[in-house]
Length: 243
Image (cartoon, rainbow, N blue to C red):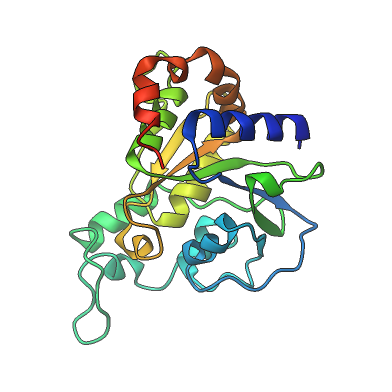
């Protein structure tokens, strides 16, 4: 991690986004600090990371089968997942009713192949806690609408395509880990808006969504900040509303 870049972004973030919370990052590694096991839902565990704690996870410590898959530690989810995500099995399983039919769930899953974690641990840290040995893969914001507008506009500032930011269907953890991580392996990665999953939203501050950015794209965003709309009167008026 380039410490000068870390501190430069922190300074620019405060200049243009007031006291909005700093992002967190994750990276995969074979050497991780010892931390307490995360709660069953990894999203719940991330709340402490936004407060400044470090969280490291392995396939053995992640308690949710979906979390294991979307963090890259398992190939499959729970049995009968297609019923769990749709209308359940009468007398045996309640369904979340997030997708109309089990057949539709199967099709969705077939278009979302699992990925294998590149190392034994995934480590989450808040931006200002990063140290020189850290090598972030993805930067994750939990943002209110005004902050989200700034991030979205900055993410497409140097782009001509219409979808430099995407909002795919998926669990909370898939939209902040799996999808942006897979995007990070592309030549021109996209940012990912998420946290629409009702099961994850109960752990997220109200009026916030997630904005996850592959690190290389994030570097571009930071390098564009001082020449972008963030220096216009329009943004100055919006910034006044950011607490």
